[in-house]
Image (cartoon, rainbow, N blue to C red; front, top):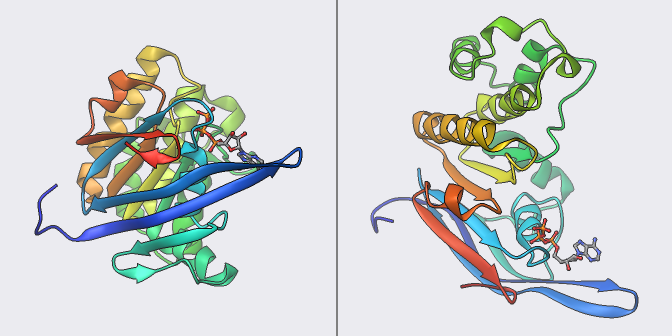
Length: 224
Ligand SMILES: Nc1ncnc2c1ncn2[C@@H]1O[C@H](COP(=O)(O)OP(=O)(O)OP(=O)(O)O)[C@@H](O)[C@H]1O
């Protein structure tokens, strides 16, 4: 990470606990994390270490108990639901293990979904994304008519269509076989570089983690 690069995401002293069966579980105990513009970071950690929890907090899908999250210097911790929704729509790309495509929409309309809502529809960029993701011949199909790898490529294209400042990906290749996972990740890396956005990707694979710019680990509620 170069010192003069803009910090896109800054997380400070983030804490989160859950109550389950009457017991308090401290999942995040003071997480600190900075991601620079264009930086691609892999997040690993044992099952249950809080990786998804951290991504959900950064995406504003859940509230932290304490600490701060800034996007490009703007704190989001105190934003209301509407502000968080706007942030997700305009600045974040989200990709989850379950592809979360809309079954009743064609590939073309799934790809354009978020960028249309954000008022940032760019037909030329979408056509380029579809081409690069190998989806140009599938635009009139529906998600159920695609393979898992193809569906995940639609989810990645949809997230990148808005040219987000940060792509958050939670085990994006977890449901794919190894060869397909490698191919989807390589494409994601290239497209993230072309988009100029930053990437924070949760993965169980230290092999895939090693292919990004930085590899961080969550352990005992802290980034090791
Ligand atoms: N809504 C919830 N209520 C209670 N406990 C929860 C809730 N969500 C998560 N947890 C607990 O918080 C801990 C962290 O969960 P999280 O899903 O963030 O881990 P993870 O590192 O992403 O795991 P995995 O690699 O298995 O997906 C786990 O012990 C989990 O059981």
